[in-house]
Length: 422
Image (cartoon, one colour):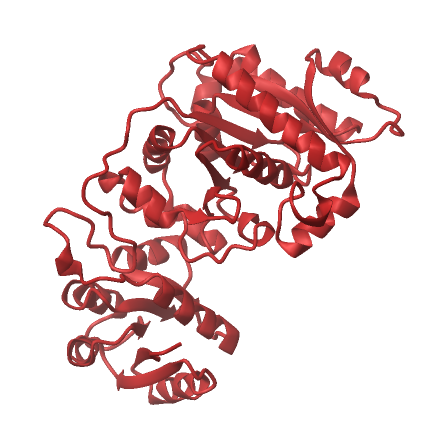
């Protein structure tokens, strides 16, 4: 790193400032340019020193850290603010983010946590002065600025949710390999990590979370193709990826209206949007399933998983999903299992449209190395062939079925209210 990351430490306790200062000495890429003991002093020092990163305590006597952060965001937009606090409840976190904070450290924190936060917010800082953009464009600190022009081009992109009501069914492996396969075939494809609390797409694709879905939803009114592609990360395959929030509690910062608008925008930018969903049927998960053109319902050759699949199929009827919207998928298929694929079709009264053979060694090896099963040393194995075939079939079916109505129009109410009101 040519230039060191310049940090301002703000805390009303001298002992805390000294402790943080000592921790930062262990990182050769970081230098402390100043300290402040109050919110007002922090504003003054930020304007004088123009630091890259500010470590901001919250509870201070004259002006709290959230108020100081809001003022600094307006006067020193290049500074990336990390809030330090013993409080971590969601409303509190929301206030901090709205004030301009880019990350949140729960006291006491470790050296690794501190270094990670500083480097991540520094990597996401604006790369050009805010004044370089016309009035009305994005000026939110720490986010890739939306470039002028390039409005969202009208298209009819297809959304596919990979979903299982039972956790651990291999949805993430299926979703990312389908998405990579489509991208390698030349389709403009996005993978969205829809498990907003505990998503693992970043690990399984070896991507550093320099930006996440939060960088889009907080600018939902400015949405255009350039903003989306500036936040999405690009995998070696050409696949673009929007990652889940870096911390589980940050999932609460996404609301239903934001997610609906984001999905509508993604449909206009990409030919295919593949979503790895959570197994929990929250309101946000339901929105993704509602908006999907196809749902790959993932099950396995065991009775507990089949029971949950049957429950979801019954639920999909109550939600007025068209029958062809849900594609029954058998993952980890093995001829040695007592329950056969034919048995599954009879039990669930649906044809099995996708099968992926069991190959725990290949799946684990790929996940541990951070690459898809369909590439690297596992690319010639039967599981990789099955995943590529599934992607081809999915693309062909969606292109043939263009314009088909997959769900009756219904007001977007909460999950329970929709079911109880049917």
